[in-house]
Length: 105
Image 1: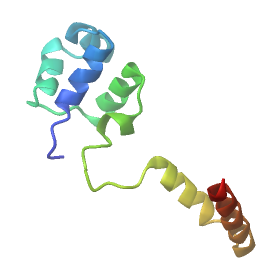
Image 2: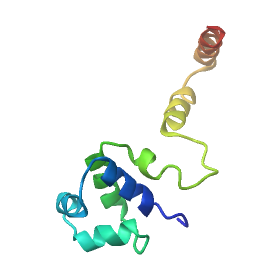
Image 3: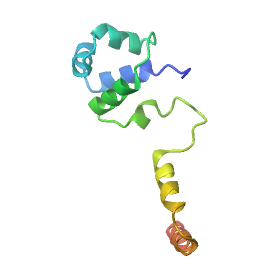
């Protein structure tokens, strides 16, 4: 990842009124580590990103989903595709008709 998400991590922390020490204690890391992440000197592991997003009450997508500007798919798109690809043609036609009805409203 070329983008620095440290500023975003810092903004979430500040938005919740938490100190670097509080976040560090919750994640079982040092306050210096949190400072390094926020200042772009180090990157969090996936495990810590997951813990951080839970601590902040946000999804991992909300935290790092905007790092890749060309990224268009979301988790809901993937979930829908997983369901749709397993439907038979009759079910797909029914689904398509239902979607078109929703779009008319």
